[in-house]
Image (cartoon, rainbow, N blue to C red; front, top):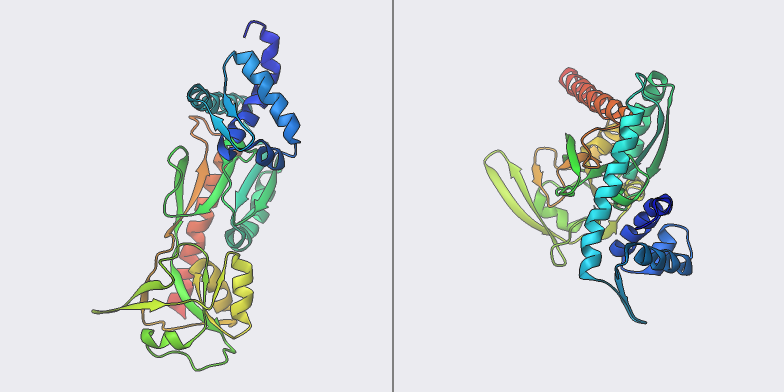
Length: 316
């Protein structure tokens, strides 16, 4: 790059380049970034000319990243991380947390936990504005505008910083107006409609281990309904026609309101579903102050919430 003025357009081009490598398609990148495929193609042409490197092998059927393109991709990620670090340093020069905090989170976690927390958070930090995007799709914050992601997973991304927010336990529940008699044993679950999240399927059945003191039973269940949206799954079980496996942080609210009831409460369940919720941030050394206070306050809020639930259950 001979002219330093060319640096002005380098960062946007690198962001588009990173997205193109990860999608493997100009058209997919265009849809994700609200551009046209021709605009993406022209931007990649200019980037190749600026760097004097061939980044892609193009054909009518496929778009392949060159070996040199792969190397530049990893360097581009470092450039974006360094740019974020620069803005973090500038933001942290203020004593008061400020700015726009962009968060992405799963629907259920966002509605059940984030929404009530944010009410007090916004009061405590009047100079922070929050943009919250709720989606059950996994968002890669490495090439997005999000400052952090909340995610329920067993395997957080290795190239990010992942902090455990809380463990995730699961409970079998049905509506209080469930249309059948509740099962008395794990094996009798096979005669009921089972609702499950779309997470991890083992062949065509789901294998669960039920534990009751010294006893354990392995049960293979075939779900009647698999839903990738937690809100819809909850609505379905509230209709009274099925039994659902739900995270306790979702179920407890409806159990306390008397809308749901536990199924086989004397049994503990080992499931193939994720057991932890994480907050995911970019691998930068210095977090923006707005992000740091959010993580610290949210973790403290979750701890106090858990202590309150434990004390309430002891009283009851």
